[in-house]
Length: 233
Ligand SMILES: Nc1ccn([C@@H]2O[C@H](COP(=O)(O)OP(=O)(O)OP(=O)(O)O)[C@@H](O)[C@H]2O)c(=O)n1
Ligand SMILES: C[C@](O)(CO)[C@H](O)COP(=O)(O)O
Image (cartoon, rainbow, N blue to C red; front, side, top):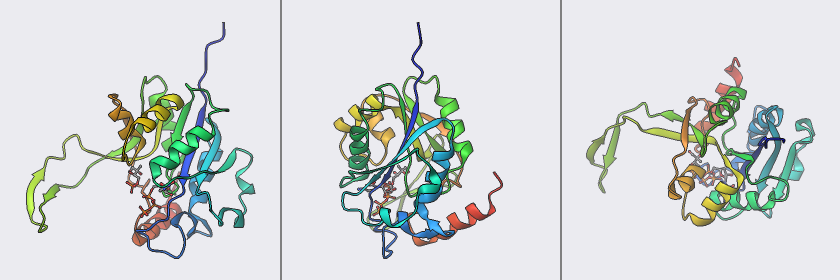
């Protein structure tokens, strides 16, 4: 009797407008080392031997995707024009769109288009550490700074102990059916793990590093360029 071997699929939500970046176009298409920002993480995901396919969730009226040449990334890359109003809506739309080719127990790695400095070791470590996990989990980094809770006038109300606090990153890796059901039931979540938590489960934290930053504000684009230029592995 053959045992089921789960495959790994990537879903990359890329239907945001990048309002905090305040640029002339959505941040996933801003130039970064001569390529659209999104190209960098797509290249790493497409090159990962563990990943079968990479689905990119674009907004329904995305006019820019077709203006770029993605052929270097090979046949694993599949654009889906089904993004929603929020990140969670886009991920859920992607999960629904691929339901005919992804088994319920296959793993899905959700990775922000806005995190261009994803490295091969991030993917390898996540998949290795979660291979036998019942629930799944996410890359994250322990909080390094002292944390303050602020009041209405921006006065410090308290210092929040940082012990056991982590910053969530992506990829976040869960079983297709579990994630789909969790997102269908969850309201207003900013990441997949929150939806899984709302279902009463406990995603595992896999330690990544600060290089996997999210490009949110203009300065982040410069940091990302520096990281990609100076990376050794
Ligand atoms: N309706 C949305 C909103 C966001 N995203 C994606 O989710 C990722 C992380 O979101 P964020 O950094 O918040 O991106 P934006 O929503 O584009 O940025 P902002 O919040 O500044 O508008 C990005 O890759 C973004 O394209 C998405 O697919 N669909
Ligand atoms: C999923 C995420 O990248 C984890 O840090 C993040 O929550 C998504 O972006 P947002 O700015 O919080 O919407």
